[in-house]
Image 1 (cartoon, rainbow, N blue to C red):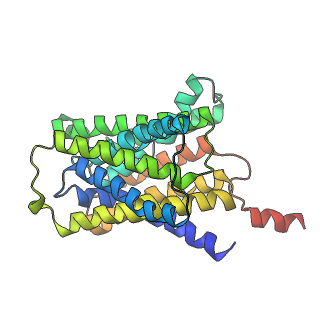
Image 2 (tube, rainbow, N blue to C red; image 1 turned 180 degrees about the horizontal axis):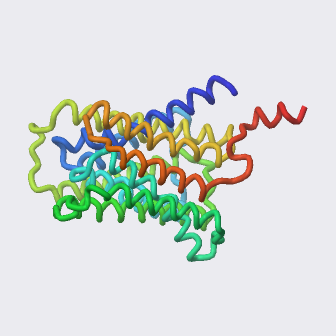
Length: 305
């Protein structure tokens, strides 16, 4: 395995494992739609000079533009934006763990429209995920009496559904990423503009002087590292490793996110929460498992010699 591949793996695992923490720090003093909007808009500004320098900044055509707007609406405005809003009322660790259920929703929805087939293995994975959710709320059922907590959960569920629909839409139309970063530029710019409109429309108070340096730094981190650098690394890995191998990083992201939330924010991680994490990650892994998933290409080449 090359050093570039190893670096890319660490970037994706660590950066996307810390984005929930970054969001939580961001919404401490900045309204959530501003956090989401500034993140995406800044990401587009980071990509702009790169596209200009490489002479790749151009119009993508109306058909591709509609596709990118749809993806941006579902995955950035919907999923990312609503997750940011949800973290106003939920802990970073809980948000990351519940978000880890998104592959299960994607599978169930794909099965409903005939894109996936039901098997005993997938049933086992779904049951593991269900038991994981039970363990999450085993001792915290009283939290559901809190209207803010319920609202946060509802918003997060809608965010997960939005991400799932975006993923299914991508598979359905078989999107080709020949101009990946040009497409991302359009997605980031559109999402940033829409989310900033939401921010000015729905934020109760807009007092920029109250925004802390820590929250602003978190937004910059989310834009540069969470949106741009991680996407570069992620798609580099897709070119060098199998997609199923890259998907393993999503399990690592959840573990890192929970550990960082405990270490830095001091969030309580109970034994039942750890069991829930193990159940959900195991359930998602069982559903997504494919032969050869744990073997790297370089290892396969060596064994063929």
